[in-house]
Structure formats: C-alpha cells, structure tokens
Length: 126
Image 1 (cartoon, rainbow, N blue to C red):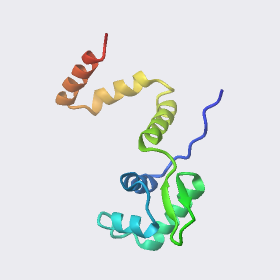
Image 2: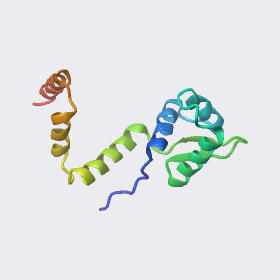
Image 3: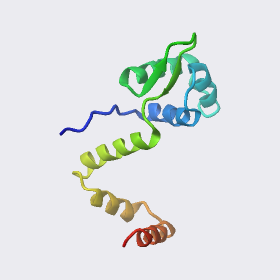
Image 4: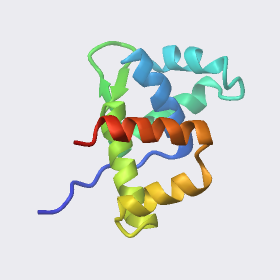
C-alpha cells in the first residue's frame, strides 16, 4: 500500500495557510486584508495569484457559487503538519523518528524544555 501524495506548500504558501486556518474560509480580499498588517508588501494581485496556484496544487478548495470565490484549506493544520513531518523524517533522517528527536534534543532544546519533555515522557510512559 503506497502513501497518498500530498501537496507540499512553500514557506509563503504555508504562511497564507496559517492565516486561513484561523479564518476557516475567506475570499481573496478578506485574506489579503488579514495578512496585510503583517506583510504590507503583499498586494491583492499577489495574494490572488498565490491562492490560484495553491488551489491548482490542491492546497485550497474553492467555492465558486458566490461572485467572490471563497477559499478554504484542503487539509486541517494538524494533518498537513503530520504529512510534512513524515516527509521530512523520511528525507532527512532516513525514516527514523528517533534520529529526528535526538538531533532536536542535541541542539534545539533548552534545559527548561528538556525538563518539560522528561516530565511529559514520564507521564505518558507506563
């Protein structure tokens, strides 16, 4: 049984998805207004084109029943994150979740975070 191919968003597409997940659905205008505070350099036409590309890739679903098309994410945030993480573990760590965790613990976790991880691990270990 093969894994289903999931579209992979670029960093820019992922940023739009993060905003859209909080909104649940939006027109191009609504999403542009929501993201323009953080990214004033993104004009309406850029957001429109990006959303059209994302729709073509299968990252967004488009409702064309209204004059202004309404877009929503094709996947829930957690589902996409899981797929991206699975792909990353396969490519960067030869499929080893243990290697990923060890690499993260070695260089990217503070002592306070390490203590919290130990506590969580102890709580969930029989």
